[in-house]
Amino acid sequence: MTGRRTAGIVAAAVGLAVGEFASAVFGVPSPVVSVGDLVVDVTPGPVVRRTIAWFGTAQKPLLLTGIVVVALLLGGSLGRRNSGAARAAFPVAGLLGGLAVGRAGSPLGGPLVGVLAGAVGIVVLHLGRRLLPTPPGPEPEVDVVDAPTVVEDPRVRAATRRGFLGYAAGMTVAAGSLAVGSRGLVDRRGDRLRDDVVLPPGRRTIPDGDRSVPAPTTTEGPFGPPDGLTPWITPNDRFYRIDTALVVPRVDPAEWTLTVDGLVGDPVTVTLDDLLAMDLVDAAVTLNCVSNEVGGHLVGNAVWTGVPLLDLLGQAGI
Image 1 (cartoon, rainbow, N blue to C red):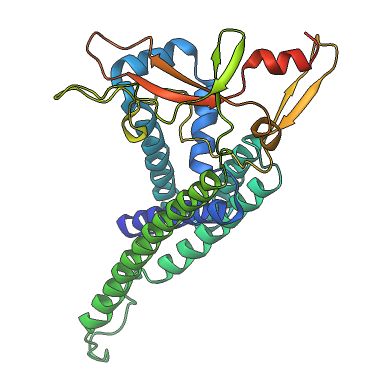
Image 2: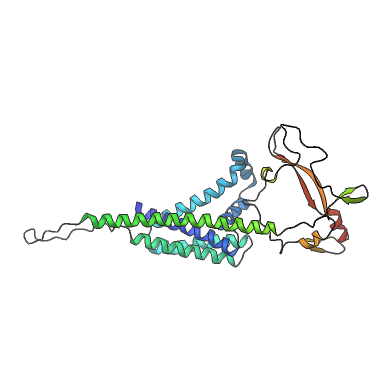
């Protein structure tokens, strides 16, 4: 059973990796992250708060790791069963993951990614189980006098065992490569989206009483930090991040819109280009997490650029 369990684990790993890579190629949410978001949404609030108290910022990585581990264990359990049960279970598991992706914002691409991951898992499991050594059957009863002398070549069984181990190792490397590649694709896409956002030069202003004046060229103030102290503005790579998202959201600036409706005189929908065409304001604001302890690192200063909310609410007729 150990070989079958290993074949199931390897098949689950490859299926997960294919799902992650396909989601990165098609630009849909990650299946693992989508399942994690579903778990977070259905988990009672007291349980979520308790896990935050226990694990802190490690809570979200532990959740995603747990989802992967559970999927691999389920794959190992399926690998021990007969082929029919495994063939049915892998696409069902993939479809459930795809439905979670659809819930996260891709109702068409999600199920397709899930079915693809499940189908690949079936193929990998089938090929792996074919390489497993066949257990010897009962020896037929023959007359000892007339029975020919048969010597089993141990190299045949050893070659089959080596072939399965090589196959399992190769599939594991392939799964890891696909997982790393999918993360690289997502990161590069995020970098391109971020580079597409260019603030208009010389348009930013700061409030000065009842009027706005051009923003200064520096946000550090008229003096630099004393020796031994950190700069006034926290660098982006050192700014703390505490939120409910399992991964950093990546917004396409070409498709993003903001709508102000409800109890308004004139509902307003603006795009990012609309906002950038308005009078932008720079504001150096300190953010401090409510869970930050005295002397803690969950606090930072940043220069936020945007449009005052009152300007948009005024356009909507509030």
